[in-house]
Length: 483
Ligand code: NAP
Ligand code: MG
Image (cartoon, rainbow, N blue to C red; front, side, top):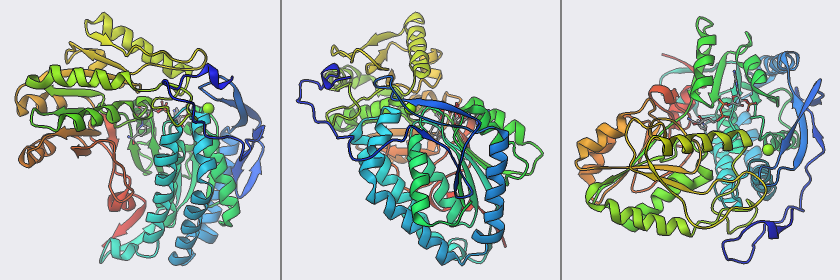
């Protein structure tokens, strides 16, 4: 596909080059420090073009077994015995190697998953390195993190991650597990395995002892084999609520520790005293960041009635300027939808939104001819019962409603099965305190949205999951702590 097939929003194309690294024709599984062939392979494609990028192993029960055995051996013989300061040194080394290869990781992330290069370059990859740096620092200070307690690792951790932040999710899961002395088997998502496999190559370069990190690519059944494996001591899962529930059921009675980071339907609440232009930027960032493939996306906008018309008008004007196009173009704001399956799901929910009586609006610009695309979309005239208000769309679609009083905003915002995140826009500090205390959400941003940091715990209530990752709370979930 030539660049002329993409749109650059009237700007000259500013393409990030993809000629400084190679993607191999095929990748094996990374088990016990070696590359192990799987019986079958599955392709991974570029969602912006439909091209097949590579083939990766489809790990079955046999290979998952092999990986868990390797992780157990590394745990018993090496990693749990190693002085904590030495463990920390490996994590620092991995963090620095990610920084050194940042450009390559960013480009591969954008090619394999469809996200704009500006985001993979400025958010995903630096944050992945930051997770390793942060947790490297904790490795030899766990007794200070939990003062007066005895701190021990848990054992072998099975980790399953989704496709929306592939490298970042891998780092966010692996770094705390290793810092606390555990070993891991990680299963990346089927549509975005490449940066995890590049991370495996980097881990080889780092000299990390064999078996401490094992990476098994594959499909849903690979994840299932991993989380159901009897020799896994803890499961850390990020993904959909449906799969999270099935995993929790399968773990009942096993004694396994677990954290589940699941779906969301965040309310972004804008009061009449908010800085409107900044709030509009926050709304755009809240829902259109990463094509809306974000668990904590601000997918429900609650705007105070007195300013609703003004905010919607400004929002539409801003949305007219968003560039939907080639993920590798630095002008691009909204890249490709990660898979045809996800595109179909978005289309179906949008269709239902119209059928149920909400009013859809999209900007006038086009989308590229080939590949998976969806224009930034907003709905007004929404009711609380509409599917587009209740269900996670996981795409660039915003449902707008209005409110008159803070209490009404809280009641509407909390009327959801989810409880992952929320946002409040107001000039008044006391209102921020009232709303953040009243919102039933694990993370609430005030006058900003979608800000992430490894020092800050992340996780949800209700159907958004259980447990926290990041910060001290996240660290605690990878340790056995006894007083
Ligand atoms: P998903 O279908 O649940 O898949 C997530 C991961 O689980 C993938 O690696 C998937 O493998 C694997 N998997 C599928 N079936 C499994 C099973 N029965 N047992 C074990 N693993 C299984 O979710 P998704 O569609 O990839 O991701 C989107 C969802 O993730 C959204 O709901 C989003 O909100 C949520 N998410 C939550 C957070 C958070 O921190 N709360 C962060 C990011 C995303 P395959 O890819 O091979 O199917
Ligand atoms: Mg792909």
